[in-house]
Image (cartoon, rainbow, N blue to C red):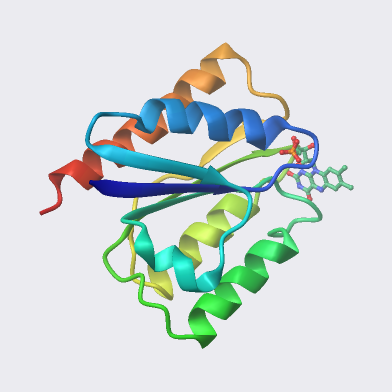
Length: 146
Ligand SMILES: Cc1cc2nc3c(=O)[nH]c(=O)nc-3n(C[C@H](O)[C@H](O)[C@H](O)COP(=O)(O)O)c2cc1C
């Protein structure tokens, strides 16, 4: 069974709502989904797809997520070829999901699903539909891989 990690951070619940919808969309009989706000660097490589949800605060990625990817890099954890995607709520600039997707692609050589999904503030029904769509797309990409 393939495993998908949905890892997110959310201070006021907007990105959390997105994370739950991404998980709904990703569901099918052949995948196991873990949704969490924390993962140890050593455990991240046990997943076949990693979807990261991050809101943008102060034009940046939340510090815990920077630290996680620093540690993944310094420990030489291999994420090459894993499927990756990002999403997040934002107010006006929305850099964080783009920054993480860049690191996934350029540093970890993951197979990323473009573009990052950005939703302004609280996701409405249409936005939640897009979140389910992202989850489904990533799940389908994963199924196509040997
Ligand atoms: C102190 C503060 C700083 C913020 N900085 C940014 C920012 O730099 N760029 C942006 O797009 N949104 C910014 N926002 C808006 C948040 O990204 C937005 O409220 C988002 O919905 C929060 O998502 P969450 O509920 O998942 O935490 C900021 C909000 C606060 C309270």
